[in-house]
Image (cartoon, rainbow, N blue to C red; front, side, top):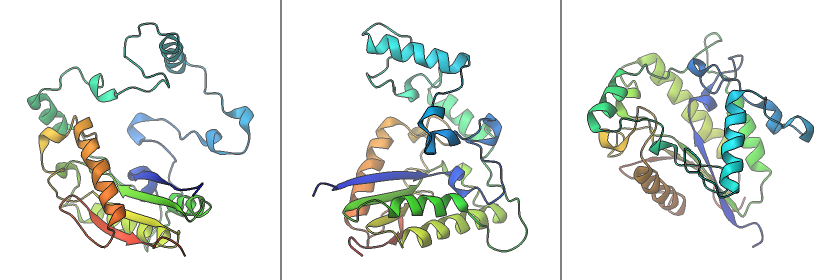
Length: 236
């Protein structure tokens, strides 16, 4: 039909931020979430003018003009950042990053009891407004096994609560499936699959795309690479 298609959403710790926590892309980066891009006012969508945004604008303009830029960009301004994200991508350097970087911790800012996760509620609300024919695939992204903090009971409790909430709210969205890649798997236990603790290589990204397709097509079957957390059926 006219609305057939698939929407894929990756669920990382930003979606697991509890109510009242600062809305940051990542605390260590100190970057605030661009709220203005998601409201109804089109006049506040211009990015802040600073050296970084101006540099990106220049690179995108040069790419659109067909001129050479430092980092090759596609005509839409995007690029494969894994090619230039690090200058040292040999396996020993990758392992130093994986095992030397500080883990990305889920934070709690409230008292006891189940955490309130408003970002997941908002996601379910937005996805529920899409046509039932549109397939919605949400997947918990695969951090390297060393950064899944399996021995940290508190972090495991937070992650379990976030995954359970994602499964709960998206089970009410027509034609939605939630897949969990944040598990011990052939992806997450192999150092060669990563450029650092959170970012996997483009070849692994292609594999994940295939797993997303198979997981959405056969949501009653787990796989070595993922677990199916919930499936709402195609038309409800």
